[in-house]
Image (cartoon, rainbow, N blue to C red; front, side, top):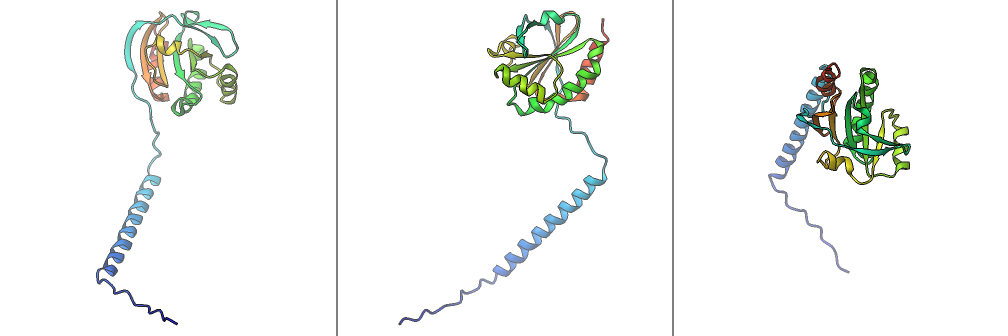
Length: 195
């Protein structure tokens, strides 16, 4: 019968020091986190603005006709007397979905000022888009774009992308990315009072 001999591992004199330093660094990190968290909670809440500033442009609105979610044909020319925000989006696109409540709220506030949003969904079947529209309480017009006609017409394949057309049919603003309410108020609202 063989006897196993357990030998004690020889301790390195720096092992204890490394352990102490590690614990100390963790405690310092924890203290810093708590201090910063306390400062943030005592400060006024800050609104997060994820929107970029729109690019000011000046060119005629493209001719664009598509079917809406109910199957009826619509065209940009049908809205010539309004300020129109064309929003290219998709049901699967996270920033597109994130901006929908902002767009919906702005639309509700300014629809009586001659403002309309046309949401152009990029590529999903009509039944899927209609379900999404209902679930998200979208009351502005939504068109179905199975062939990317809107993205081709505006020469931009990024989602979300938005374009503001004035009452005379000129594209005045272009966004790529999520739009904030502050940017809508700052850039679109002044167009509502133009003749």
